[in-house]
Amino acid sequence: MSEPKSVNRVVCVDAGLVIKFISPESDSAQVEALFARWKQDNVAMIAPAFAPAEMDSVLRQKVVRKELTSEVADAAFQLVCQLPITIDAETDCRTRAWELAKQFELPTVYDAVYLALAEAHQCDFWTADRKLFARVKDQLVYVKHLSNSK
Image (cartoon, rainbow, N blue to C red; front, side, top):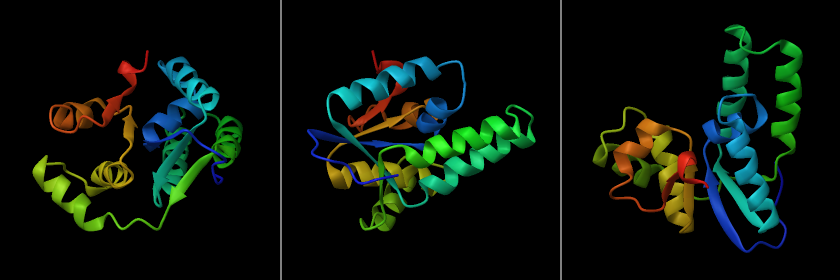
């Protein structure tokens, strides 16, 4: 994960979206097209400090569940390490994430950290999580779902 170069815009991306880019899933082509568009438009991607561990954990889970071979997971891990996603460990989102988790009755706070980070950066948050999107879409207009990427 690296520092963005000169950018026109920033988006916050969740681990689920990134996993669909690096690991074959039913809607991976849609994510590839979205990421290609962002690259062409010079859009930078950001994620919270825990995102790399979350992505790596999902890859390991896929190996354990025999959804990926170890070799494919290793290649996906190398790819995710090279993606131009800036990890934001500086923005303190903890309190706002807690408030958002309570407001939307989210069972985990880590989803709310993505929301709070996007809010702090005044940027869109892109997710592949249908349940999260359904909970917040009417009140948080900056939250975008992969299905709306066309």
